[in-house]
Picture 1 (tube, helix red, strand yellow):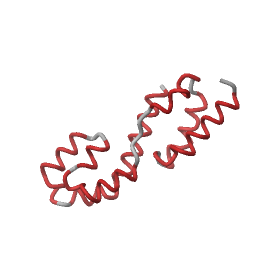
Picture 2: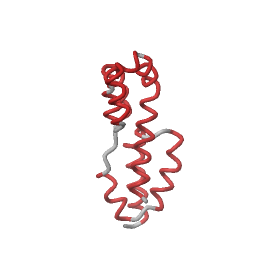
Picture 3: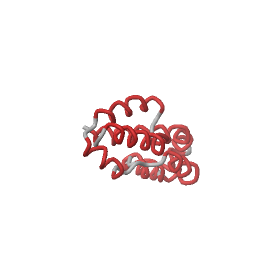
Picture 4: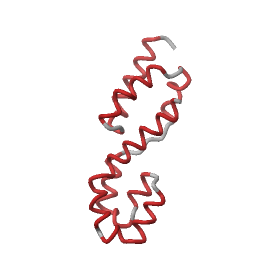
Length: 116
């Protein structure tokens, strides 16, 4: 893949998928993409990322039952929230502020593992 095509692929990914990552991860992610192999860049679209906005909506509507944590992939925490009724509402309230950040961190970890 020529350099211009690589750069365009990276910019397209960052434009459309950058919102799925925290601001603190974007520079590191861009550098990792620049050093990634051509095969990894081609297959980048196959990595399934979770939408932090969807996680927030799930947290608002169904967070007391742990559905937001199930969506994020935190099955153990989802079961814990389900069995405790969202920690009697306290855990649900905390997750309203934390779930988007957690999903962005999970997305970053997933991309880093893919690019490794």
